[in-house]
Amino acid sequence: MAYVFDSFDTTKAIPGTPQGCLWGFYDRDGKDEVGSINLLTPEVVLAAKEEIKTGRHVQLDWPLNALSHPGFGRKPFAQRVLNLLEKSETCAFDDEIHLNTQSGSQWDSLKHYAGQKDKVFYNGLTYQEALHSTTNGIHNWCERGGIVGRGVLVDMVRFYEERDGAMPSPTSRFEIPVRDIEAAMAAQKTETRQGDILFVRSGFVRWHNGATDAERHQGTKTQNTFIGVQASEESVRWLYERHFAALVGDTVAFEVWPPAEGSSWHLHEWALVWWGTPLGEMWDLEALSVECARQDRYSFFLTSAPLHVKGGVGSPPGAIAIF
Image 1 (tube, rainbow, N blue to C red):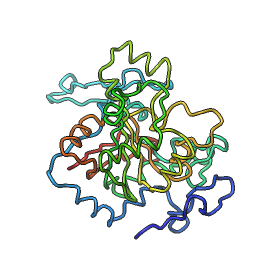
Image 2 (cartoon, rainbow, N blue to C red):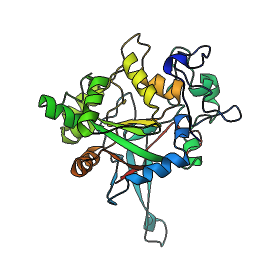
Image 3 (cartoon, rainbow, N blue to C red):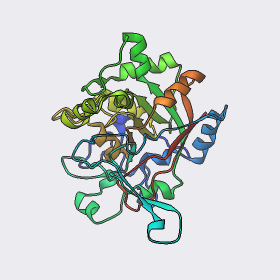
């Protein structure tokens, strides 16, 4: 089926939500828990397969142990290898891992982040309801068949380096405005369509890969400021008008972080809460950017299989770009 949207200013008014909220838009029988992933219809996926021309492919997950010093009080990744021969006659190994799903490449599910004023999640799920239910959990995407569609990369690193000679610091609060995203897309000869999965490369993973341990600690643990898409009315309206199925970046929060105090244009709220649009953060877009430049095209077929955890809040993406 095709989804036809009202304009931002003519969306149905829903009490307690801002203009532009899409609660109820995707509902079937009065319920929806997958949000804009609904846009990945069979027709959209079949059209996306036309991106497969060479058979080359790139995985987009950063190594689980890559983030040396997770911020926001999160525990780092830990692995324990178990030698089965120590307790049996079987020569084999198992392993156990500790994983905070927000401490590396991740999808944010629709119960990760609430509207902070009223503590409400996508489609009106309250904080109290979320405490005791699996509603809006990441398992809903898995049970729908994962996330499959057309990805589009906007390589802001390449754009800024070619235009300005250098990329702004990924550990600064540099705001990437819509005008620069559009300019980068024009330079790449890239166009988007409804149901695309938007990728924005801003250089955080590249910086972290090349930084010393002391620089990483300072940049991710001490100061907690990160480059990202500008959180503004212009950005919200631009994203709304394009109706992406999901938004992905290589930085800590997709949007610039921390958000401006008192702003009503916080992209975490708009995406996850008001639109039901998944956010991907800290994805490894380095090899992807190289392949896009090599082929001189910035669109690709994407598959992503999140962890199938009932009520899951986040997950490594298990994502592959195929050209």
